[in-house]
Amino acid sequence: MESVFDKELTRLSNRAASERLGHIGMSQGGMCARRLAYHKFNYKPEPYNNRFIIAVNDGHRAHNQIRRFLNQSMTRSHHYLSGKEEEVRLTLRNGFIVTGHLDSVINKDCSKFCKQHYGWPEKTILEIKTCRNFPENVSNEYMAQHVLYMKATGINDGLFVYKEKSTGKFKWFDAKYDEKIFKQAENRLADVLTAAVPEEIQKEYGPDTTGKLPFQCSYCPYLKQCWSNFGLRMVKEDPKIAFVNVNGLSFVPGIKEEF
Ligand code: SF4
Ligand SMILES: [Zn+2]
Image (cartoon, rainbow, N blue to C red):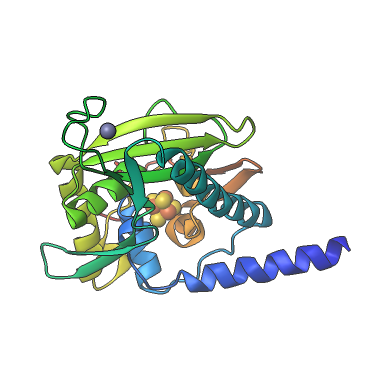
């Protein structure tokens, strides 16, 4: 039974890897630019491992569950949810169009005499996330996606709800539109979409002084393409930890040149 189960997970993993090839969308606006470039040029990604496939599936289920609970609670709260998985589009500074899908929009639906919600935003973009442990703040990667959705919809208020998987607890974060974060995300996507080869695009992460790569690299499906020429070695598989040689190497994340 176990081998049949593993086979099915491997099939799903390979399918998920091939589905990702080529397309660049708003949900990737906070990823490492070089990673997006490998993706755009159809470099072969490492297949996801089985644990990752299960985690993604849990995430999808959590989305539906949280949306259902919110919908039910809002029937008595002068708010309603709309825009479930609605596609939104954004034209970047160089004319390329990127698309994305909203988790949901919270709409205020009060009479003008409602004192309870006076001053509340008319519309708020809702982002649903699952996590192993609650973060202190919303990550830069998620904020980048979020401001792209805000720009595309003209909605300047956002709300993140995180579900902690092991406890079933929730944590909420307000988020406001931020032009600086938007420009970074827009430039990242625009540069990747116009690049002729991946090497034109900067690596946004790199080793520390001991050669240890950050988790963004260790879990990147293009780790091998990116670092094999630099003595890449995996030191641990779970959680993954990768190292490269840093002898005579001065790497500054964000600098384009190869070494
Ligand atoms: S390995 Fe690191 S630097 Fe290279 S593409 Fe992936 S995230 Fe970016
Ligand atoms: Zn109200």
